[in-house]
Image 1 (cartoon, rainbow, N blue to C red):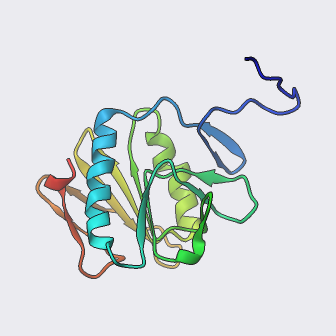
Image 2 (image 1 turned 60 degrees about the vertical axis):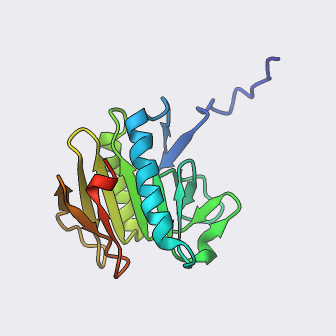
Length: 174
């Protein structure tokens, strides 16, 4: 059955993000390696967070910067420690930690537009996971100041700074 379309409204993709007024299509779906890495990281975070106030949400899970605003993103993983930010549609406000796994169609956006947005919004820790090189870049932002990332690879271990006692082994990720 064909649906009528109001010609004044743009046709939006099924899944999309809106950043600084620009619509970004979220298709095609992520690759198998992308999903495997997200699953592995989500498992590590979820085991650690069991019984704690924080929770790790995988995409598709929307993050809005302000209530009643269409601007939103869908990070691969969002760790949120303030239950007051959770709404039925997702999160309103900056998550404590965001993970993005690079894909061919998302790498540039994850390294530029989204990184800037996350830093300005107050995300405390931002991870960029590169499946091709099996590395993780970890950005820590204090007082909205850009700092060079810590880069982990090989058999390294990533200390999760927003938690005092969580370390993730890369061999459990890749």
